[in-house]
Length: 247
Image (cartoon, rainbow, N blue to C red; front, side, top):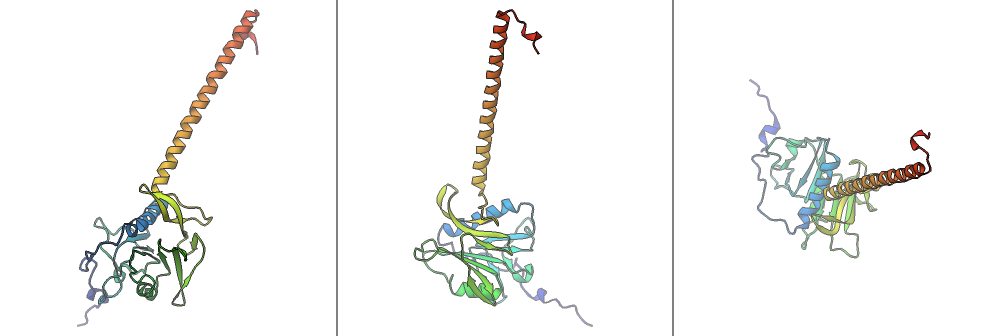
């Protein structure tokens, strides 16, 4: 009797794999920068359900290897929400999709962003790899690489267009969660930065105030026009002319 064999049945599931090593992130930026990118995607891709952005989440790529944990990563062509429990980790043999983008934010100590992790991401086939090092002064703080012939090639520009994602990635001074500093943002093909949630609220409030101001100005113009008409009508009556008979 032959048995049906599925190799996936022999591999641990995401529920069985550790979803945390209890190691805190090195600093706040390593959490906030990818969180901002995720928040912008949630706005501009609100109608799409074929993407997932992970923040400080483990990617399991081999059953006998520990997960690799980018500060942020993007996958396309996967379900955005699995169920109400959401994802515990990102398991390649379950997802069947390699992330298209990975991000590392360099802290006070290097954690293999330019060596070990870069090599693993290349071996996995992650097309775009971004490293943001805000402490750099002599070199650009943001480096974006594209995988070509199994080697990462450094791209140039700010923002840098990523055609397979249909977005650009760049750095710019801005305010997020009340913190004003340089942040990473997504850009459109014309090089225009997509607004953050805070900026959308501020823009909406500014438009509301402008609309109210325009409404008040229009009301004032109508009142002034009515007053002028009343004054003119009164003068005509003083001259013995009935304004109602005028056309």
